[in-house]
Every structure is written in C-alpha cells, then in structure tokens.
Length: 478
Image 1 (cartoon, rainbow, N blue to C red):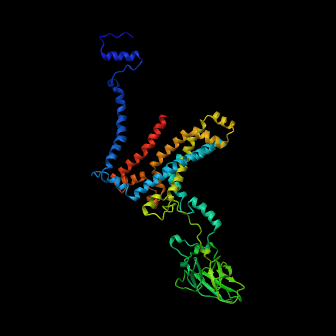
Image 2 (image 1 turned 135 degrees about the horizontal axis):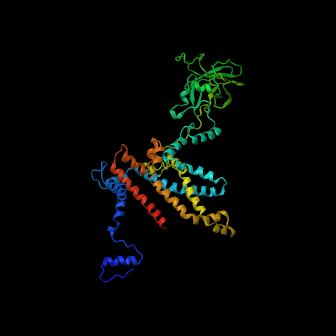
C-alpha cells in the first residue's frame, strides 16, 4: 500500500487507515444505500404489524369502549374492581403455577423412560403425536372425553363401571337430575316413605293379597327387565301375596286402580314385609308378571315396602367441565370464593393441555439427556452413588439449563392461553374458565365491543409476559 501524503484529505486518510488495518474500506451510510433499499420493505412491514399495533393498543387502553373519548386509568380501575375479570387473573395464576412445572416433570419422566425401554421410538412417537394436532381439535376431543354422559365420556364411563361394580343401580332408576322423584312413582295403594322408598298405604294380614300400582316408568324400561302382562295372584293361607304393576292402560288411560290386560307388571322388584313396629318380617322379589309372595307370615298387620335400591340411578356422571369448585370456601364472601376456588374445568383443561405438550417437553429434555457427559455419570456410579443419588446430584444439575428452557417456554405459552379454553369449556363454564387472553378477545372481537377494556387487558398481558421474555433472552445470551 502506497504511503499517503500529508496533502491527503482527512476522509482519504481514514479510508486508507481502514484498508491498512484490514477493516472495511466502505464509507458512510451512502455506501449502504443498496442494502437499506432491500431492508426497507421488511422494516416497514415489521413496523406495521408490530410497533404500530403496540402503540395503538397502549393508546386505546386510555380511551372508552369506542376508543374515541379519553378516560385515563378508568379501564384499569374497572379491570381490578370487577370480580368476573379478576377471575381471569386467578385462572392465569393457576395455569402459571401448575402447568409449566407439571409438564416439565412429566417430560422428564418420559425422557428418562425413553432411554431405558427397548421400544423407545414407538414410545416417543405416541407421546409426541398430540402436538401435531391443533389446540382447537384437541380441545374438542377432550371435551368429548370429559362428557357428562357416561355413554359418551370415557372418563365417566370408566368411573361408572367401577361404581356399578361396588353399588349397582336399580332396575328402575329415577333420574333426579331431570326433576323426577321416587315419590312421583306412587299411584294406587302406594305412598312415599322415608329414605326414597315406597310402601303400601294400607296394611295387609296373612292369607290376603295387596295390589300396588306405580306410574312414571316407561314400557321400554319394563321390557328391558323382562316384565310381562300383570296378573293378579291368588291368595295363599299363611302368606301375604300381591302384585306391583304399571297402573296405566294405553287403551283406557282414564281407568285407575284396575289391572287391565294391556298393563305390565314390574319384574325383579325387591320388596320387604314390614311389621307394625317397622322391623322386617321377610323379603321377596317380584316375578315377570309383578307377583310376589311372603310365606310363613304370622298374625298381625303388615305393610309392603318397595326398597329404594330398585330406583337407584347409580353413577350418573361427574361434570368435569363444570364451574363447581374443588376448594371449600363457603366461609368466605362471594369475591373471595371466586378468587380462591379452583374450578373443576380448569383442572380438566390442564390435563388436556398436558396431553398436548408433554411430547414437546419429552423431546427437549430427551435431547438434553442424550448430550450429558456419560463419563461423569459413570464416575459417580463407580464412587458408590446409587441411581437416585446420581440423578439428583449429577443429572439434574447438568440438565438444569434444559429444564429452564422448557419451563420458560411453557410459562410464556400459558400466559397467553386462549384456544383450548374457547373450544373446550362449555358456555356455562366459560366465565369460570376465562383467562386474560380470552377476556381480551371477548371484549374486543365479540358482541361486548369494548375496545378500551380489551386494550387495557392486552397491555397488562404484555407486561406480565415481559419478565419471562427477558429471562429467556438472558438465558440465550448465556
């Protein structure tokens, strides 16, 4: 490089010095006009979709529902003074405190298992597969799984199977959820008794017969139990006989208290013969025609009781997606109850979300486990450390950066959780399952139409996400 003379301009000297030092011989911004021209469309687009919405949202948060009249901090005051909106903060807290750590733990368990089983590829595929589906599709699947009807919801069907094995339902279940009562079944010669039982309204003595008419049970139910045409039994000396039948004739609906040819008996009913003091004198079961017989009955007056177990509906299902709380807070005021209770629908949705994201946690943690220095682990085992000690004192500290990645990622994810709640929680539970992101959507894009309140919620959500973003950036920079 030729030596630069003293007559050279300062700009020429700077350019020459840059060349001598191996630097960039380029000049000022004019030399980068071509690059700036290529970057300009992307920068403008970035400003349009990121910076402008951020500024506009922050501005609208200080305006009214139509974003035209300035209201100052009015929207923020409304947010922190409205119980239905405070519930959204409670739900976000539940998600943040429970989900990231739980999904990380499950992912860690899956990651360790995948290293110790022969069919690890198939295992990883099955666990990771749910993340392929959208949260909306997964929410609809899990809404069916948690359905109240045991004939639809798998969870309630499994519970019903176990419940029916322990406490089987009666042949003629009464659906109390629809307002039906056992007392409503009483018709001819029958009255209601304590503990949801029915008994004869009159007494009977040995050698006589009694007729008990019921209503409110469909012919289809009777046919399922094998019931046949009602037949009046003959009297038997030293015994109490009788009939339990459906006191309704399709051909003669006004006739009551008469056993007609087109009326059916109640088959399989469990009956108890009661003495005057209420003690049991015997039991019997009706035959296909509804007839029964208590033999060896002594003197005295008796009543016939239709046992309440005949009408037990058994397990009818748990409303997993309901707003009922798991936390007893009856001693607190209404606002405190709303904030401290944990709705069952939240727990159900967290389980569904775990199904979706457990595969992601497993893959990330599994990659971290595969990259660990095996020599360090083997050295620990040679020094006498057991599996649990090796895992707790060696594996976990070396795996900590990976676990933090999963926790922070899931933390950001659940702070803005939206779609699974919108699609999984039924309308009756939407209020109890609401979150900040869903509330922002409801106020801004549905019939509620409050742009100011929706913008204020968006600003609060953004502020809550900032610490997690900063933590993630620091972790990336190392």
